[in-house]
Image (tube, rainbow over all chains, first blue to last red; front, side, top):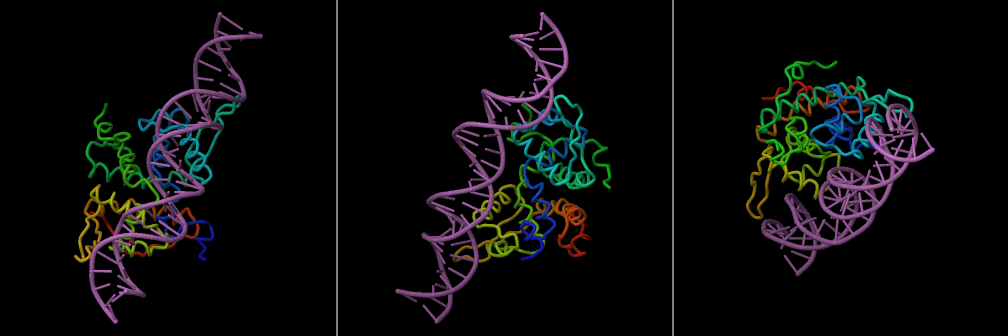
Length: 123
Length: 123
DNA sequence: GTAGTGACTTGCAAGTTGCAAGTCACAAGA
DNA sequence: TCTTGTGACTTGCAACTTGCAAGTCACTAC
């Protein structure tokens, strides 16, 4: 029984480990939205991919649990939250940047990200 | 109706587009195995993450359909195939490289990839 | 004939996703 | 007071996906 297996992971491989957290169709889409300034539940719902509320709720909770985002109250009655990326979350930026690069090169009809997005550097 | 939506995609965003293809827990694990030299069905089954045969079959078919891998017969009776990465598949290397970097930095107990892996450059 | 090998395929239970409606805790307005 | 609106979820359910485990197929070797 390896250390990685003891903590519930499939293996100690860093790729597989990353995919345990963000290896689904939605988590990095939400990360994109945060990277581009969205903070609130309704803003994420507005994205063109049309995520559903139950998936969004589930993923935000996962991202909080894994330390990718912070929940910050922006009003108290009723209590409402904004979500912002931690350093750990922001550090996934190069992953999505490389995904942008790949799709722009190999997949037809993808949007061009702003120059600022591709020029940005991560911590 | 945008061009992207007509082709069945959630949106034209390159990140979302990439995730339509590799946004699951297994596809990039298989890509890792191919990047490190594995070519045959039984070799992928041997990986520490213990993928199941039905998922492996499904993902290999998807990767072939999307042009990430080529199926090459290595024997004719019975017909058996090896799988190798196309340029399109290989070009996902920086994505998994950045995942390695991220997990090694933020997740405890992950393996260190070989220096050669992190030093490698993609086309 | 039997046994072994490699590459799948199949049956099934559990889990996940997407759709759509509903609920909750407020605030604002009549 | 009541009604309406807002934003953030929650819920019910059908369809789909995943993981487990066994089975099947097309060979070869003995």
